Length: 316
Length: 280
Image 1 (cartoon, helix red, strand yellow):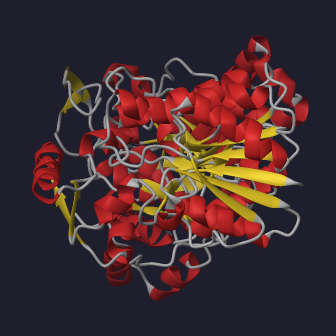
Image 2 (cartoon, rainbow over the protein chains, first blue to last red):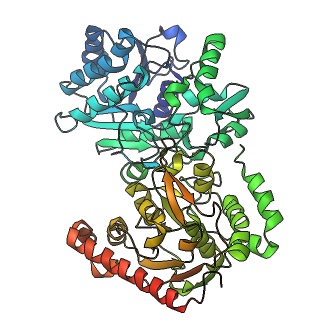
Image 3 (cartoon, one colour):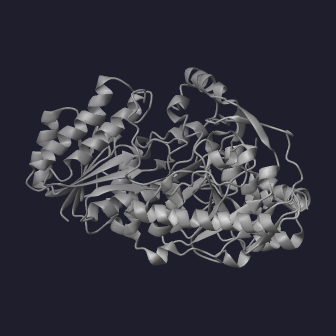
């Protein structure tokens, strides 16, 4: 394979992925794209097999020039799109442009690109609906969260995911959508990570749902497998850690306190105001009541991905 | 409320004989990595559940059971049973009986109505002991993993029927037959006699929280110490008669469900004929 382009490479996940691709000798060149200037981005810019380019993906002309300039010259065959607004607090038109419009523009340009053959989209387990009457094991055909009152953080992710799904079969690109379990690591936008950063974690009394969490190592392994895959389609990427919320709190060394469900929203609203945290209980309310665990059968059978690296608790 | 397995383990250790605790360590289940399966089952809570139901099983309802040889030692299976008694103590007694009479122990995983996971504490404790919400995909995933399911095809109408309708099976749903054919599992027709008389229902209070259908008004308000009789019938191997594709044939599924219903009614009638009294 001649080259892979990774967007969002100046984030925790993007950087890990770039490192993994550089460690893969079958990958010729890695074009790492981020928003930050090179001196603030990756500590890898001196690598001969990597080119870091700061590009604002919401600017179509710049994306065009990136793809039909350096990406074409370096023979990029696979684009891995991981650049999404990181926090649930970010809202508005510019966030939508980054999450959805940029994905659409990038895909449209890739479709008429002379060297790009494959498009891998990082999607999220949050696109799925979790509720009492839905299956605990979430397969790829599970209901998506298309509720009108879903927060923009979820709506944008569903929209980007569905756009990629719609293009499958219509486009000459081979498209892979990887719906990843929540990556429990700093700087990944993980709601659970932010929730567990509190010394005291409140949870709704009488409920203890099962969660599935993904480690950084498994995240990168799944994407490296997708970069080399011949298939296209939607794949759930579960992690090796399936455990109840109360155990996650305990493993992190936090104090878990059960409170009546109606107290949760005001408690966490107050926490957000005082401490400026990202966790929004309203967005996670159902996940804090009912279990939802990604079923990774399809990724195992078709991509050869099996979660193997558990989370190294507690994360610091 | 803490759901920590250590509390469950301590409770079980205080209530169960050491030999039973040791036997339960051989429980086969699909550990997803932290001692829980993806649906939330934890072996310490199975021991907790057995410790909790043991006094009811042994002393209150003095359960007599037979036909354990029909329970599959390994692999998938569907226990299809009648449902009665205003509150689902019949499910608890079948669950306990299966744990006690299988070796290595197996858990009959009750497939509960959608509202059960919504009930605080109850939904969580039941899930730890093996219950799953009643979605088809949950049941299918468990059968594919080789689990044993406990299904009451009558559903809530079975448990809610009037005292005068006791031992008359209500509308018998067909989902269990479709699952059995598609996922290659034998159906074990199972009957419970005794539960119908434990809390005669005289009325209902409609309610609108946690998805509960109603609160039964029973006389007396607690279960009477009736004797429970459980019987597992010979497995019905519908999966050997039909191909998985035939699970979509409404006639095949209806016919299979009628056969299972007749088998359960036959077991009930047989036990009622043998029974000498409600309490003996």
